[in-house]
Amino acid sequence: MRPPFSIAKFSPKARAAIKPYCLAAVGAGSVLSILLAATLIAKTDHAPQIATPAATSEAVVLDRKNVPLCVARDTRLVSAIEAAVADAYDAMAKARDLCNAGRVKEALSIYDRIKIAPVR
Image (cartoon, rainbow, N blue to C red):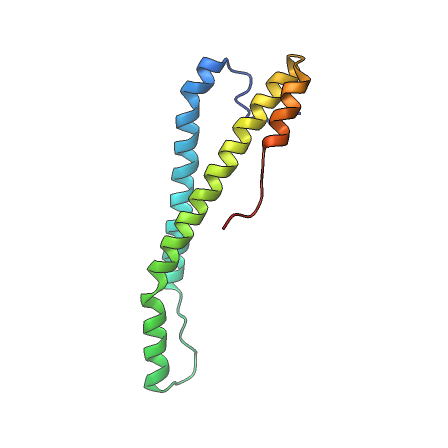
């Protein structure tokens, strides 16, 4: 069963025209999510609620300086994950179309080539 937002009902030409917009929408949503997370992290008070010596407050300041490094790494990872999911979804949609057209052997071959696994 296809989800209601599937673009498989469109012709291959229409899908090719729609695909860049779908990927752009996914990318924009990801960027907004990451910016929201970065804003929340930056505004969160990591300092303890009790009086602390100066050395501890310096450690908190140093920790906050490294937040952009984490956000950048997070952004790259999320982008890579989204690209992998988009590629897998495109392959799966093609396999579904082939299967619906009666070309089961080709469809199964495409399904077998879809790899979703941890990547370093």
